Length: 149
Image (tube, rainbow, N blue to C red; front, side, top):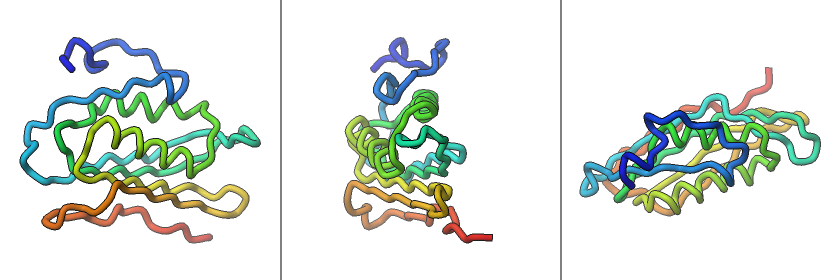
């Protein structure tokens, strides 16, 4: 993709759904090096597909880039597109992970969805593409397990 096709630096409307959202990728300047890139989405929201009530989560996406990096503005717009999208916690978390893995062709990708309680039960969802490279420092995702107060 060339810069002319990226959303970066352009006025871009918020996509109305994840299906309408465009995720942009750019070439990895270090494709021969294993390193971890992390995106944290501390205010992720979607809608319960049954009640229409909002659901809230912290998402942590870790990946070891292959040939591509995700462009962060497009990722922000994609995440925002879930705001009016009805889907269960598991579906949102896994669908985001799969879409990024398909787009980026990473050496490794994992996503942790740390969902706030609904009906008194927090649901945490984790998905990854496979084994992390052996020489990689893979830090804890840093989100404490839910503890009732």
